[in-house]
Image 1: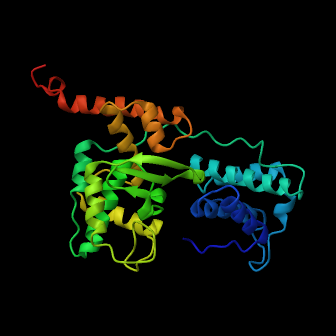
Image 2 (image 1 turned 60 degrees about the vertical axis):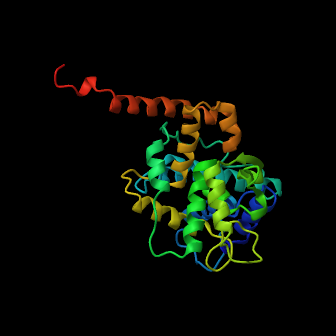
Image 3 (image 1 turned 30 degrees about the vertical axis):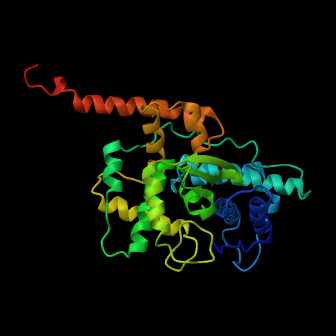
Length: 309
C-alpha cells in the first residue's frame, strides 16, 4: 500500500474522504489527490513548496477551463487522463461545497474531452496459451508457482490487477472454483475460476510460506504483493513469451471477456463476472468479437491470397 500523503491539509482530507467515505481504493484516492495537486500547482507555479496551496480556494470555472486547455496542449495528456482530472476536481470541490467552504463547484460545468472510441486490444486463444506456457528461469519454486497461479487466475477470471493483489486466501474456494472479489467502489462480486487456475493455485499454496498476512499472493518478504510487483511479474511473462503485441493485465481482461463471448457466454453473465455497472459497457465486446472473428477469417481464408484469382 502506498505511503503517499498530500502535503496540503485540504487535499489530504480529500484523499481520506475518498478512501473512507466513498470506498475508493488507495490507488484511486492517491491518483485523484495527485490530480488536485497538479491543478493547485498550475494555479501557483512559484509557490513555496513548504506552504499549503492558497489560490485553489478561490478557483473559478475559468481557472478549470485554462487548466484543461493546458493539459490538452503541448503536454499532450490523453483525453481519458484529462477526463479523470476533471472528475477529480469535481469530487474535490463537491466536498468543499458539502463542508460549507464554498457555495459552488467550479469544475461541474466544464465539459470533459470526448474519449476516442477504440476497440480494446485482445489476444487470440493461441496467444494466451503461449503466454501462459512461458517459464522464467532462475526463480525459486515458490516464486515460479506463485507467478504461474497469478497469470492463470487473471485469464480465468478477468479480474483487474488491483483485484488480484487484493485477494485473501479465504476469498478463494478451490473445491467450488468460486472466488469473492472486491472491485471498484469496494463492491463485492462472486467470480468463477477454471480448473487450470484452481490447480495452479493449489500447487502454489502447497509451497506458500507460513505468514500472518492473509493475502493470497505474497512477496518474498511474506507480505501482500503490491501493484508494482504484480506488474513487474506480468511484464516478465510478456517479454519472454515471444509475443509481438503489447500485452497488459487489462489486455488479458479484455481477452477473457472476448473469448467467453465467442465461445457462447451471454453478455449479462460477462457483465456480472467483470463487475460492470452497465450492460452498455460490456457490449463493446460484441464489436471486439466481430473484429476478432474478421481477422481470423481473413487470415484463414485462402481465396484472397491465391495467385490464380
